Length: 210
Image (tube, rainbow, N blue to C red; front, side, top):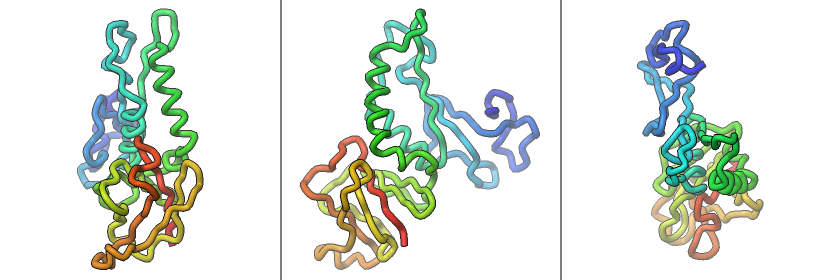
């Protein structure tokens, strides 16, 4: 049960017995997840629509792209939350073809990178400038959204990573400190071949921690 359905206040230091199990922000992803009055994280789920309506609206063609949906999902998980994505069926009970195309693309990304989502949560690390982290046990997942120029900096993680691989295909990613980063002894770096990221939506690198 969600707190918004029951009217209770799950964010209180001592929530009522009927406050529910999780909170449900709608059409927004909280900036830093959801915490109670004591500053402790609580379960939450962002409820978003694929266009601008909860129900079917034939005139509403403002569809979120598969890229937007994937990045919203990653953002929720990186903040310790879940994503509920609403699709309004037609009067015949059918899913609009536009929705099917978007969901198939998202499903393709999930087949390649689902390990960085299922069972994962907040990594207890500052948000990096290039993207986000998710984590499950000793596996840290770097979701590289914007590469910038040069190697990707993993701040404060020198000597903490045993192995790095591209999650989509298992190929090894070089991890270490290149010659031009000698002045950053506390950091380590991911070095991708070529000038562009392998996945322009979200390049996921699995980091095995020591």
